[in-house]
Amino acid sequence: MAKDRYKQNLNGMEAVTVGMPTNENEMDFEHQFFDGAETVDIVIKVLKETYEDILAAIQRNGWELEEGLRIILTLGLGYTQGQRLLQADNEERNRLIERLMDLESVAAVMKFRAFSFMRDNQVLDMQTGALRNTILGLETLVQQLREENAALRQELRRLKSAENASPATTTLQEPASPESVTASEPEDAPLSQQNRAFD
Image (cartoon, rainbow, N blue to C red; front, side, top):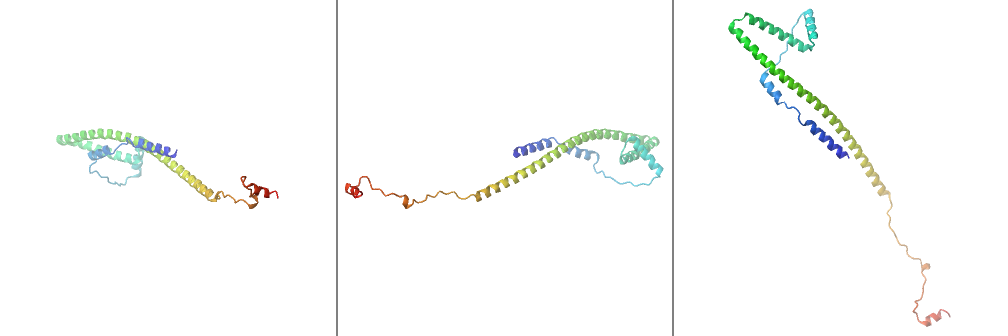
């Protein structure tokens, strides 16, 4: 019975691990768009009024704090590049337009990849929950097996104790007492011997 439960839990774990997303797409994505990329920390001081305006803009758009700060910073960068585009000559303007087109293409690809990663993450979340349930089931099964093992050991000790306490049963035949032995003469004894018994 416990063996059957163990097999059922193992089959459940095999079913969960089948079809899990691999990280090949993630590695390809990182190599294509973030090869050699690094992060830096930016620490600046602004007026409290400016900081409160930034927080208000972040809250209106429903952004997280760090996400909102990055968006506002990059929006400012885009604005300055747009101003530069307006003031640039034809050659530089064409170069900036090409860069903008490349960024639009990258953004479209990144959006699709982000959508795929989101779906993979949802699958992983479901499989992680199933694995947690399987682990809990296995832990319960192990506890049950330990209890059954302890009960079997206790029963084995009881049987051994009962076997050692029982006396040896051997059948001994007692010898017959002399009083119980009656001497009789054989029927075919001579007639003279039988007559002596009457004298």
